[in-house]
Amino acid sequence: MKLIIKGGKVLNRGFIGIVMELYNNNKEDNKTLYQDLLLSDAKKIKLISINDEIEIDNTEEILNLIKKNSKNTLTKKFSTNSILFGTNKQNFLKELSGYKNLIKIFNKDISKYTTVKKGFIYKNKDIYGISFNNNYYIFLEKCFKTLENIQFTPKLLNKCIKDIFEVLQILNKKQYIHNDIKPDNIILCKNRFKLIDWENSNYIKDQSYLITKNGNLVFNHPIKFYRINVPYFGYKFIYDHEILTYSYLFNKKMPIIIAEQVEKSFNKVVEVYNKNKDYYLKLIDLYSFAITIIYIAEINGITNYDKSFINKILEFYFFDKLI
Image 1 (cartoon, one colour):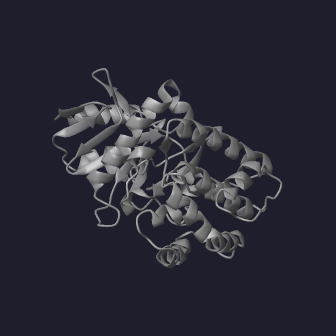
Image 2: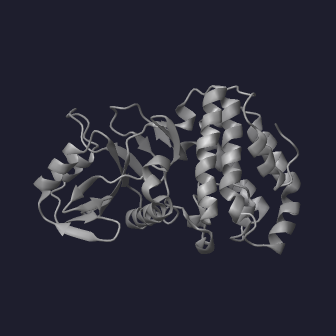
Image 3: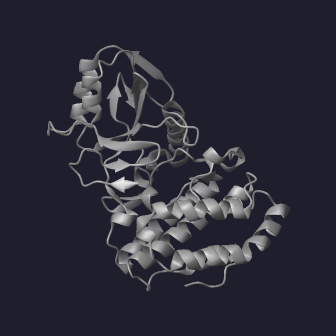
């Protein structure tokens, strides 16, 4: 995922979509929701609240609402149609489902812990998404800095650990998983770190055995993919290719050390898995976050940070003490 400085045409580009501004005074910046609506001759616009779809034909009214609310809100446009990553509509519905679950879990604290945000209010309903002409968008809080784009100090890294661990504890109590934690899915919003991209999230009891609901390989343990009948050598083959997409990990020592530890202890992990199929599902977010912090610490040359949570998590995977 590539982050482009504020004011660029695309703020964030991922495998299934792009993050754009709602509206921009810069006429050359035509990658905005406002411009998409204006230029696409949108008909039968659907506004999506948590429980309803509202079909309207008045583009002008929606353009005004988007322009009015553009100061603090961004939009994620789903922009892929592939066998591997799914369709625009499928990915939009996945993310919307995640939004619905999070609103139930966090209730009044939803804006404190997540970037879930309504785009505007229409006829007394909070609008979280919009679709037209087979285009699908969801709204989110206006933030720009993902972890790989932050110059960390030990103090800031410890804050990141504290903020995200707090969220993971709440999710864990609700038996819910984010399912795709990595540096580009954690963002700094004002003075708090938050998780983003919830399209793979779900309750543990609903965790899919399909590969499309299992997130990335680089920041996950292979036991997660073993569940869907991907043997270790298959995981390793894909891992070796996928890690090349994370340029900030080039020539770093910890990814190599982690890979060695994973291979060394994998059979022990499988033994535990065979006794309790869901044992590691409850730990997957914590594992991914631990690996994320280890890598971010190395990237920023930080050694003096709180390692207690990380070492405790890696013990469940039979790692030697790493840090």
